[in-house]
Each structure stands twice: as structure tokens, then as C-alpha cells.
Image 1 (cartoon, rainbow, N blue to C red):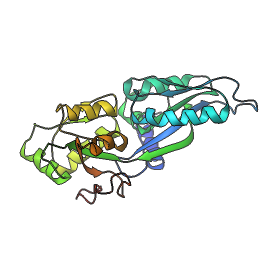
Image 2 (cartoon, rainbow, N blue to C red):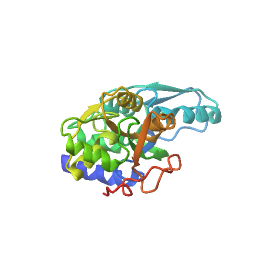
Image 3 (tube, rainbow, N blue to C red):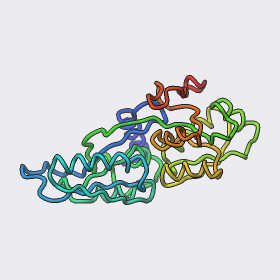
Image 4 (cartoon, one colour):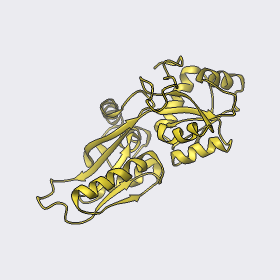
Length: 260
């Protein structure tokens, strides 16, 4: 597949799968199914691969899904975290596994869409080697700072970045993740600069803010919410078109003055 063709396909799939705006994260449960399982399926345990570390968005979604599947199917559903290469390691493992319905992938947009254009070559093709089964859910990303930062709004963060060039870092859930790409787009649109510090999971990206290693991040709401409720972090904006029901007082990016 040529580079241009791959990019065109990625954009098409992205439009179909992404929830919300440019910072939204959608979770997908994907199986390498070459053919439909027989009527007695399942007859043994099922493995659910999470290509990210424990505690991240995909892992948090996987736990209750696996529990429900195990209860309904009458077989154990074992979660295995196969991390590395921005989710490519675990995704490639599932893509190359036997297409018998016993190996599933629960993932995010990154390994299924973004990585097809961010990496020169992948060991798998998500468009042909993985079959979507169900949309597990979606949520916004939340731009947040430490509560004692003195920054109370997204516009104040942008102003601070402009007045102190080179003094701001932001964390993300990994190179090529939506939590990085969304901030990169925000930087372009606001003509600001901040150094990207990638981490392998949202809990670690949050910890970097709390420890003062970075000044802000735009990461999944599930990671930010506990710290906001504890008064340790301040949410500045959510990425979705409408406000989050969990953070009703936090404006959307558009309401905060930043569209597109």
C-alpha cells in the first residue's frame, strides 16, 4: 500500500471512528477473526490483549468488558498487557494470531488509525488484519494543570506560554497519541511552544504534572477526574463539542475561545 493511499484510508477510517472533536478518544474491541466461530464457541479461555500499560484508558475499559464477557460466555477472559511502540506491539500480536475468535484486542485510535500514517512501516495492517467488533465507548480529553499553578483558564495557559517561551512542557500518553497530537494542533493554532514529554500511560502523564515535571496535559477524562475532585489539579477545557457530564463547570475548547 502506498503512503498516500494509506493516509487517505486512515483519514476515512478516522472520520468514521472518532468520537467528539480532535481530542476525543474512542475505544475499540477488535478481534483477529478469519472465520466465524462454530456453534459451540467458546470452548476455552479467551485472551484480551491491551496494548498499553495497566491503569490507562484501554486497560480501564478492558476490565469490566472482560468480566462481562466471561460471565456471559462461561469461559475465563484473561487480560494481557502487551505494551510497546505506541500500541503497535500488542496490536501486531493480535493481528498475527490465529483467527479463531480467542484473541481480542481492546485499543484506542492510535494503533488502529494514527499509527498507520505516523510510522513508516507497521508489522500489521489494521484495515485488513483486524476486524472491528464493537465500539466500547468514547470520552473527551481534558486539558489540565496543577491547582497551584496560578492558571485558571485555557486562555491564561496560552498567554503564559507566549510570555514564557521555552518554559512549558506537556505530558502525553505516548508519541503519536491523541493527547500529543491535540496539543500539537493547539500549539500551531495559537502560535505557542511547549516541549512534549511522552509517557506510556495516562496515570504517569498525570503524575508528571503533580510532580512538577511538566506544566500541563490534555489526557483522558478518566485519568484527570480523580485529581480534579481531590483539588490537586484544575481542568481548563474539555475536547468534546458539549460539556462533560462529569465536569459540567468546565468549558469546551470552543467555549474557551479555541475552535477547530
